[in-house]
Length: 183
Image 1 (cartoon, rainbow, N blue to C red):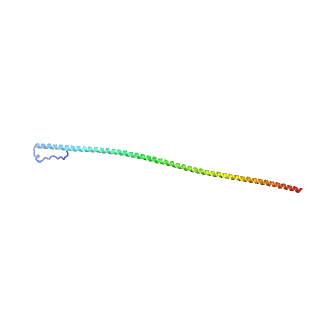
Image 2: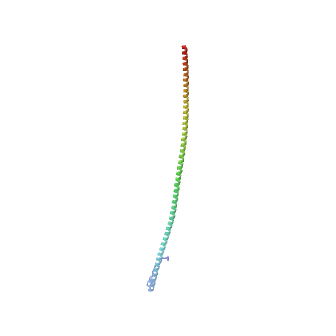
Image 3: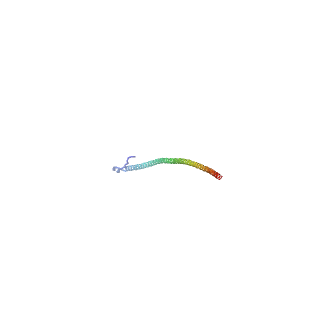
């Protein structure tokens, strides 16, 4: 019943009427009160239904919110997992690069050490060669000196022998001369 219900208002002519009309009026008032009570009950029922519909809508909204929340949490967790994977991959890549750099540094140090060792050995070899040449020259000089000394001694010996021979001849001549003079 959608329209506004107006309570019954008896006109003055009806009030002056007799008992039948009075009962009829009372019956109509009771009917009117029943209608008002039914209308109130209907309004209350409608209010309860609207409240129930609001609750159902609220529950659905909360369920939807929870589902969205759950989906969002899953998306967030997936994002966090992806970020963690990327972070770990980044750390692994940085570690790989660090190890590669260490390897390259070690190779460079090794190459440098090899080069220095080769240079040192070359220098050492040159020094040894120079040293051996010096020793050889000294040996040659020593031999020459020894040869010179030997030759000089031999010459001195020859000179002494010649001198001795000359001295003996001179002595012999002197003796001969003296013998001749004594005769």
